[in-house]
Image (tube, rainbow, N blue to C red; front, side):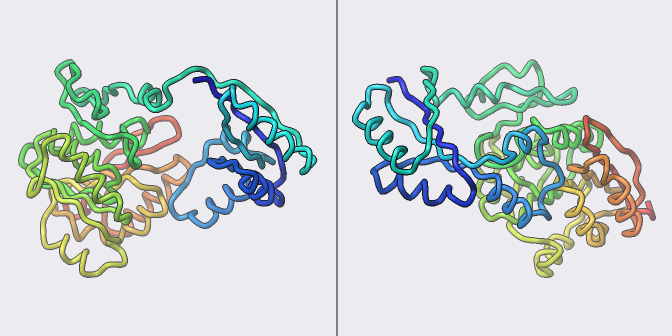
Amino acid sequence: MAWLEITINTTSASIGSVANALTAAGFSDLVLEDQTEFETFLDENRAYWDYIDEALQEKLQGLSCVKLYLEDTDTAGMDKLKAVMKRLQLTMQVAPLPDVNYEESWKDNYPPQPIGQKLMVLPCWLADSDTEGRAPVILDPGLTFGTGAHPSTQMVMEAMEELVSPGDRCLDLGSGSGILSITALRLGAQSAVGVDIDPKAEDIARENAAYNHFTAPAFTALTGNVTADTALMERLSQNEYDVVLVNIVADVIIGLAPVLPNFLTSKSHLICSGILNTRLADVQTALTAAGLTVTSVREKEDWRCVTAKRRDA
């Protein structure tokens, strides 16, 4: 079956009325691309991001369009669409789509990913692949942040190869997919606790851990905000952790800095990542003010990963 992609360019002010007209004419499954809506989303969620791909921003510059898809044999649908365009005084671009199995082709973007010296991240459909002697970290990469492809995650995993020892207890703040908790267990940790502010992440992390045959009590997934939820922080701080992982963004790490010493012993290691090079000094200042000493800084592209210990260590 061959498909056509139809793109209708409009304005941010008119995109809603164009979509409504198409819906009223019987066209469904519309895709709306609007720069204003994109920028509003970013502004409302600024605490959770530090970096936006400049190429993506440029691509979206001034963009407002509606896309829909028709089979190339659907002449009746095309005639109806042309009538709507004439009434709205709009033009459309029609492009054939390649004959691809879209339900499966997205998986090509997630090949096995060797990381560091010991680890291999595998999508769950390649769980039985040869890992070349590396420890497998198996994930469903379509669910949430943390596939091993981002430099910030890779640097944490590389640091973990050096710092996680058999029998360690690990705490993963901002656990997302659970990739770092799973990595800790693969490296011989006795237990890992993953905490994320998004309740969906708890189920996703638990599912990914199960792909790797890790369940409670080895792996525990929790939902909460340790800076705002006193009960959660007290629950977590009742235990001692050998390695604490924080792979989020600079502003969140800075906000967490005052409570991080509660989870560290004199021998514990803290690994923080998701830090743009332009925010490194801010994070280091916050960690120092919280009574921590930065012991190393890793660099990959524009990103930095910081390891630290308690100053009384």
